[in-house]
Length: 143
Image (cartoon, rainbow, N blue to C red; front, side, top):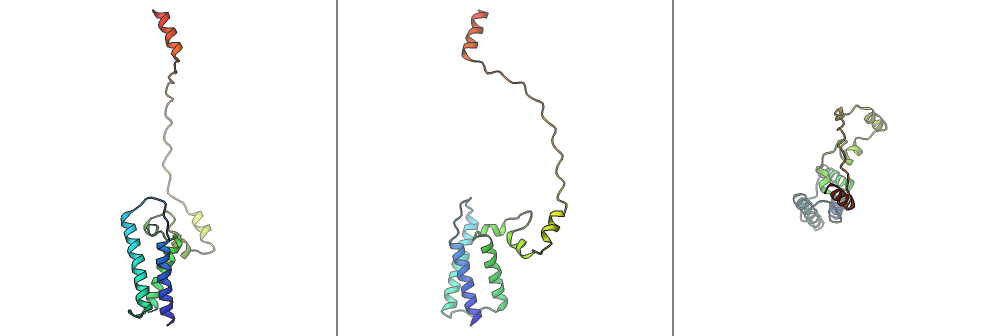
């Protein structure tokens, strides 16, 4: 019975977090469709499990649900962030790989070699902005 309660709670937390995500950035239709499908599936599974229409998952299935819910919560409900590659890894991977010495060790590791600086460009001659009165004066002198 405890697994069933945790299963329903986990699914509802997942669905509500995705539903309440208010993204302000670029819209990605494929990711938005995936997030919508995940939200609807989580709600549907929670309702079916609540009414006893499906079998409760085992401990392994519950751990997978908890890991996925934790990942979505670490990214504030942004499903697109789960698929975005980063240099230092996602927030979840940094959280799971954390150790007291990890920040010291990662800061001491050499990074990629930066490209050499580009040579400076020679200065371009400045064009003088001539006023209308200067142009008129030059025209009178030459004519």
